Image 1 (cartoon, rainbow, N blue to C red):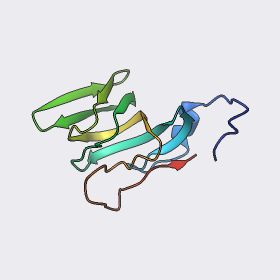
Image 2: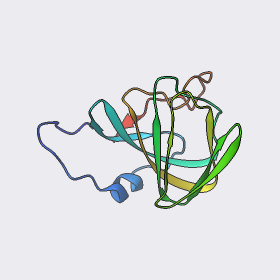
Image 3: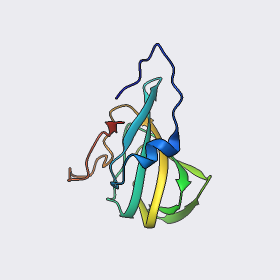
Image 4: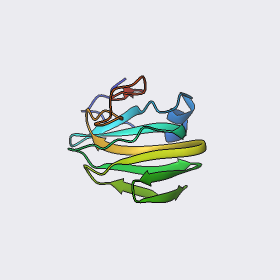
Length: 126
């Protein structure tokens, strides 16, 4: 449920993360300045994709994952973040369950320019 924009609320990240278990299905928890703040659980390999019109920020809250690029891999641990610039092809991979906080423009589809799949979503509000 979208919060009332005229009345700020406190958002408890642990409570929000505890409200879902599905992977690769971002949950929107806030919006600001045309951006959405999302939580997602990662496990396994995601599709190779890019976002031609959007940068993406990933902040690791729990676990760890690898952000793969065509020319390198970046290991990400709790408390670390990475910004994937618009148009850069990437693929998050997580051998074990990992939770991340995402910042991206409102309406961005998680699979970007890749062919639509059952994982394709703009996220849902929780």
